[in-house]
Image (cartoon, rainbow, N blue to C red; front, side):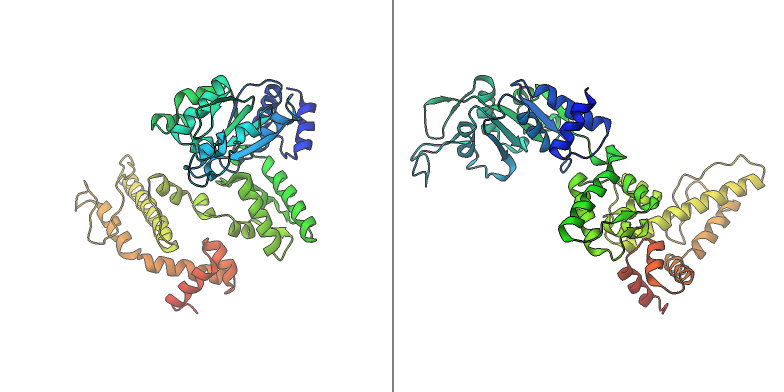
Length: 395
């Protein structure tokens, strides 16, 4: 890997980041560029796959010829064959003239098939023939035509799974993936995330003639630990939102979290356990209840262990979750056991409404009645907090 060459390529194509997996992907693209081998680029949506076909084409012997990028997922199934391979006059309604397809247009150059997994199976068979022999037939014609194109494909779909479910041809997969390039997700690039935000912030500041935003250390840490499901595209959108909406130019973690969807579910361990178990939450109240249930179970387990130790027994964690109904009894617990008294005490005193009300009251008291700070501590929106204050008559 030639680091200097990779850095020059980054500058040329405005790629930001120094992650090793990113450098490896660029290096592979540069090495394969001088050949005519098919390349398959994989990675999550928004991770920046579209820059790699450009790197390959601009460093190939075909760089003076056409480069065509085709979004296979954006073309209706009924017209995809005509778009790719062309048609002859009268092939279908409105086919009033002969038309060249993309493979004829890109002859001698490079064609980039984005979202290649979206191609219908019949079109996949036609594409396979192009890869194997460079031959294709226009829609409505019987004449075999030749094309000399370099094919680079990309997808965010797990093709192994698509093959197993008979949505993608296995033989086409092996033809396309002669050289595979894996583009890392943003969350895998750690230290690159603040660099990208700085770049997007500078672009936004220049475009709208405003000071660029900056991050505090805690905001930077939050930025790097967020899971970024939308990858670079999402980071750019978030940066632009903050640049326009935030009144302050120095962004703290408390300010940043309002621009990160489901940030709450990423920071509450109890909630994360519930999500891994397959639960979904309809609203913020249910989220809070789930957290409280976990908290109550932890308290019950702790009291059971303390009780056992006081009796000289080996503490055994309680595995059964506590019922939310006061009359319910945990399984395998004797009515005469002291633990039963502990359970009854917890159930009778831990009313969810009362706990929620007390949490809100404490948060408001801590921040001198200021709802913004209280809402941040509670990890709920100010609108939700306002509704809760009215509901519990805390004004």
